[in-house]
Amino acid sequence: MADFQKVARRDEIPEGQGKVVEIAGRTIAVFQSGGKFYATDNTCLHRGGPLGEGHVKENVVSCPWHMWGFDVTTGLCTVNEEFKLETFPVKVEGEEILVGI
Ligand code: FES
Image 1 (cartoon, protein in one colour):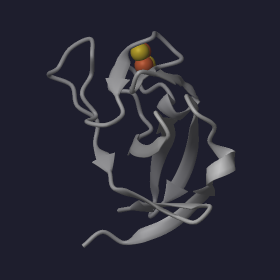
Image 2 (cartoon, helix red, strand yellow):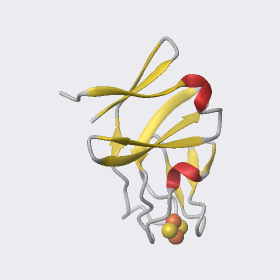
Image 3 (cartoon, protein in one colour):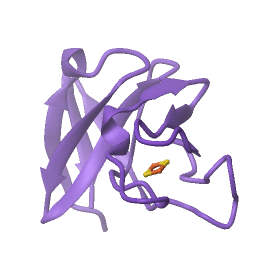
């Protein structure tokens, strides 16, 4: 069972943006896309760029370093599907966003 922890308030992560959070010793990116929230590992599988600082369009976050894309709903890289980020379950309770790890 995932242990859900509060990571942000809804208004801290506007549509199309992300936030980098630390939980359980992990660095995780939390995004809002299409009115829903998603969480993935923050570290880009290309050269370690901070995905939580990227912008999301149609569920794909673009890494701010060299623009590799990752589907925030599945973790799959849109450049090369052999690469897949770890994803984490997200719950919204009122104004709070919780991530399970
Ligand atoms: S480090 Fe993310 S695209 Fe290069």
